[in-house]
Length: 169
Figure 1: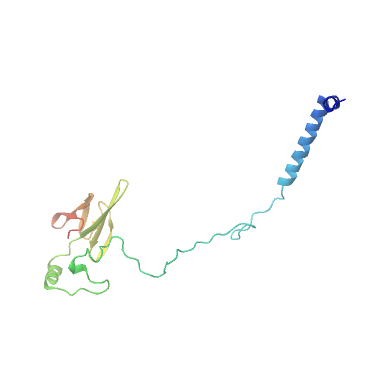
Figure 2: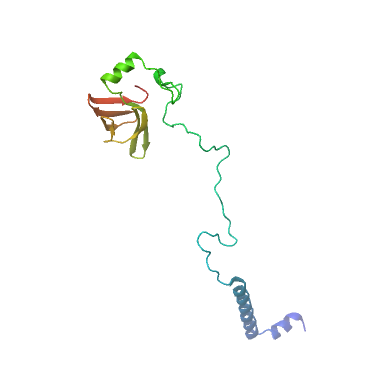
């Protein structure tokens, strides 16, 4: 008798089904035992979970705390007019023209840039020794900002309408 005939006689359909069912039960039990772990309570607030990794932020190499950063909208030293080229904190020597302008009229605002984000626009205007951003209908001293274009703004002030262009004083 050959092996094929012996196996065909020994393994009937019922025995084969029973063996497959027993194998499935054993495999399922092994999987259940392996994956079921006792439930752990979550760690209290402020404490990391056991086995977790805590990542702390690290400042980039070369970062220095306490160093004053440059105003990103300020003109560089090569682009500033001669009257504004004085280092920060050092008062510029007052010329007779400046004294006369200070007595008779307030300094005019200067447009240093226009920032566009989507449909919103903001104008960076230097006025009275301060540079900050303004949006339409805000006041720059006695001037009201009426419109902002790509490189110019329109103001309404005591002398009427005033149009400022980027880089022109």
